[in-house]
Image (cartoon, rainbow, N blue to C red; front, side):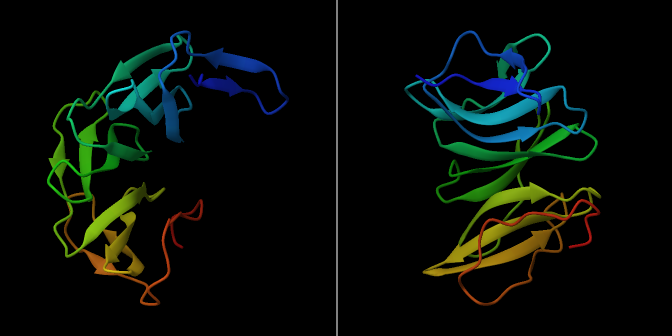
Length: 166
């Protein structure tokens, strides 16, 4: 079993989760630094969980039998974008930070994943896979404006500059 812990950059332990799950992946810290969203498994499923750092408490946000992974907070901390294969293929979903109002926003061809919310809040970057081609795209948080911005076929795992321009 793995444990999830937070450390100050000077090495001082800030918090940990007393009841570990099987594994943790894709940690994302909320803009206010008070919560962390992760993909975590309880031995049966992989879901999105949010941990309250100060209290050491955790809340399971997704319960679908599919794999839910790669969470990213909106800049205002009120929503989380994530990927899931619950619709039969890897696609992008958005939900409120309490897990309510889960909805699919990607409908383009192929598999869509690794979503990352821009610091400005206006776009979500993602990876689209069609066959053996991987490209980076962006879309608005409602799923509109889906646009591939790379075409080399070997790009994946987007991230944003702190100003959200690049």
